[in-house]
Amino acid sequence: MIRLALSDAQWERIAPELSGKVGDPGSSGRDNRLFVEAVLWIARTGSPWRDLPEAFGKWFTVYTRFWRWAQKGVWERVFKALCDDPDFKYVLIDGTPVRVHQHGTGAKGGLKIRP
Image 1 (cartoon, helix red, strand yellow):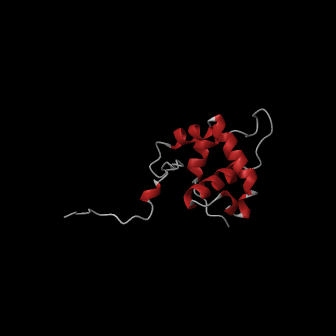
Image 2 (cartoon, one colour):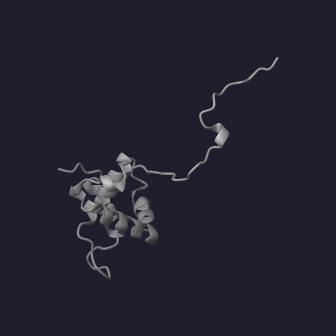
Image 3 (cartoon, one colour):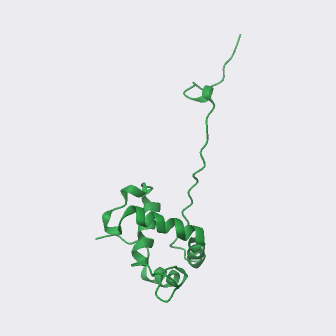
């Protein structure tokens, strides 16, 4: 059994904002709720995509769909639909790499006093 992150009320609020629902042009997603729960599981645990439990489906399929929704702005619409819910908070991830100068790695810190 998968522990769900979204309540039924939250799901009802965001369901109309999602791509791939019945009635949209193109193919419809198999299970939008399971997909959103998979993305929330990744965000909540901080795990790599490859560690996504099999119960959510194939990790690469979930990742590809996540990326496509990000390109279309679907996630922004979802966050806007949930922003006034006090039980749901944004998950912000900064993937900016920060390089350290070669002399700054492993150096002992502190103030050096010279006579």
